[in-house]
Amino acid sequence: MSWVLFGGLGYEKRLWEVLGKPSFKVVGTDYVLSTESFTPAPWADGVFAEYLTHNYAGLVAESEGIIHLSNSLFSCYVAIDMAILYQKPAWVFLPGRSWRLLFLSQGEGGCIGCTEPYHPPKPAMVWEKFSPEWLELLATFWKNSPTSSTLWEKEGEMKILPRREDCPLHGEEHPYATGKHQLVVAVSCGENSVAITPSFERAIDLSGYLEEIKPFVRLRKSNVFFVEMEYEKFSCLVFRQGRFIVKGTKEKNTALYLYRQLVGV
Ligand SMILES: [Zn+2]
Image 1 (spheres, helix red, strand yellow):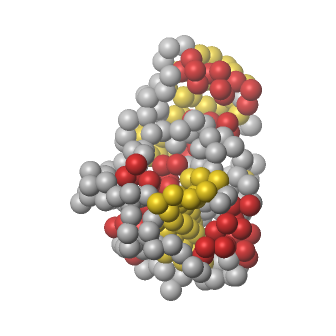
Image 2 (cartoon, helix red, strand yellow):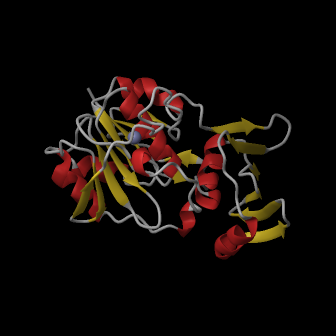
């Protein structure tokens, strides 16, 4: 059986090497915006050129366990929900103001959803950059994993995660693994554009958002309903309910890449 690596940050091969080259199936690698394609991973035993969605539940069911390293917090919740559903161990790097590492044990303890209900984060662009030192930390515990779910906040600092009975991921419903909570991606038939609509609450305070994103994009227009901007060769609209439209592509992974970077999910 293989481990499933949900990637997207470009550390996939390095992670595989640091862990001693185990059998990996990889979903999502580094996304190259200029060519609108994922970087190949010929070293892996299976590669899926997509970001993680609930459609990969079957892959998790047949796996040894999960590793997750991408810049989407939402994707972390999808992965953890799948791991709980199929009773697999999971190593999840949690992005945010500073990175953290979660080990989800199928023995004792809870998950991140037990203590922190999902809350949409800031654009990935404004987050702390991932430090490869975290890979070494994972390598240290990889073969000798804790018996309880554990969270490393900084290197050396770890705490046990308690289980909470009302955790949505630990309940019967599994809203992330089943697709109840998802990003709905629609490619336009007529126009050269893709729209993303979250199926969950994702309200944005546009004035605060504008200040954060300004240094990274070329602003075209903004009002109380939306922000219009240019990034690379794309034109993007961000609406206050979290809806997103990108013009200049029909590639859904480009839209998802930009959503992670420019909106945050
Ligand atoms: Zn939980």
